[in-house]
Amino acid sequence: MKLSLYPYQLQFKFPFRIAHGVRTHTAVVYVKLEHEGFTAWGEATLPPYLPETQKSVSEFLLEFSKHISSTSIDDWFERLNPVQTNLSAKAALDMALWNLKARLENKPIVELLGVGRTNNDFPYGTYTIGVSSYDEMKLKVKEGNKYGFEIFKIKLNGENDEEQIRNFKKLSNKKFAVDVNQGWNTVEEAIEKILWLKEEGCILVEQPLKKDWLDEMKLLKQKSPLPLYADESCQRLSDLEKLKDCFDGVNIKLMKCGGITEAHQMILKAREFDMKVLIGCMSESSVGCTAAAQLTPLADYADLDGPYLISNDPFEGMKIKDGRIQLNPLKEKISLLKS
Ligand code: MG
Image (cartoon, rainbow, N blue to C red; front, side, top):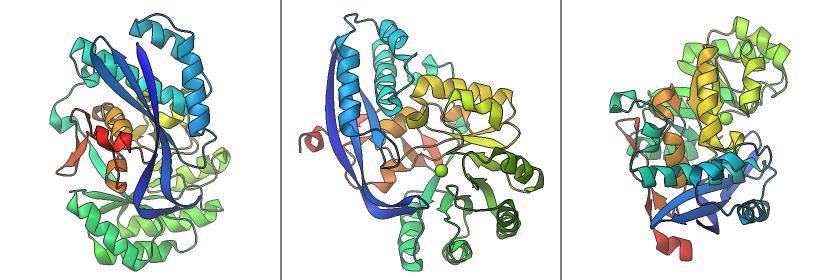
């Protein structure tokens, strides 16, 4: 088993502004596994609010692989699954191993996971619009429509929320969700805005309050007419138990939980707790989003718009078709990786 690493910068088509700040690009590390004539890819995406860097991901993966002489994928999983640190690096290797297993067994990951795969099972994808001026939003709505998205996710930061929604509604009559990224400061502010958003036709609210404000969230959940989804509050499998009375659903991302293996366990646990599931991303390219897309037949929504937000994706894979996630095999555009 040969492991190679490719650091790379993904460029956003538009600057991406959320409650945490603004960014124009995202650092990633691509992981390539080669074994028995097959090649499989993984991706660690590293937005600046995460502690990992290209250097830490590369060092972790080189050190990890140095100590495994086995070529059995199951042995690699056995060593990787207990790892509790370097979760983006872990996610990259985990998805590369799943991709390799799929190639070796000639079955899609979705089938190896025991997930049904008729196209009707694939959920709608959402197209994310960061906090924008009217003119910027106009371009973004046009872009989302061009690719066939039927639901938009509008980022709010607590400062000009009404203007964002009013501008969106001038530009589109499609469904929309909002993601507050912890941007509201009190339960009272949240409930007032949620009541208004409900009237405006919003379908769900993601992370309205600070990630550790669970007592406040419990109160808000009792009063909210809209479903509330945890994102920053929900990182790992072990978080779900404490969130079940605070949120109606969870946003599960491979980069937060360390890959397909734990994300799959999280979906099953969330369903045990009667919670809704959204599969999200951190603006990964097609490698990360295609891996996450394997889980979407088990989800209610999929926020896998990364490949549509970046201008220099070195791969292609999952797509949006008639608004829904469509699984396609991952294809490399190697020339970009060499650049
Ligand atoms: Mg979010």
